[in-house]
Image (cartoon, rainbow, N blue to C red):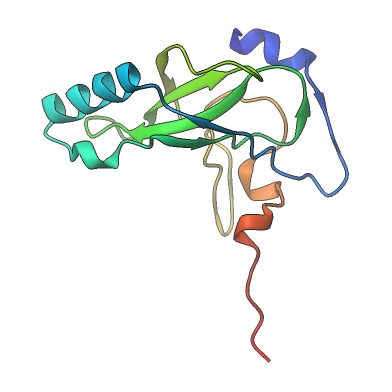
Length: 131
């Protein structure tokens, strides 16, 4: 999917839930990401092999997940995408989303579809309230 195609996706608006679709990064892509990290002098252990879509819940279109931050860049990261029933097939360097608000930044890529990560509800990361 091209980033320009992303605007045609239908999103589920109620409470802006995160998609959260899961996938494993194939061994060949893990090797490529580890090799790139080593070449940059970064820790190859920082490569995410268990992927989770960070986009707002969507009906159709590709899922997107961060594979690793790039050691030689302050505003780009390595990402992958996959469709339901498919494995991720490639890695791509994407600029970070420039959106910010008072308590943080969006943790997705520039021009991502749907809401920013700070506006999405993630049941895996709900705040814990002490009694």
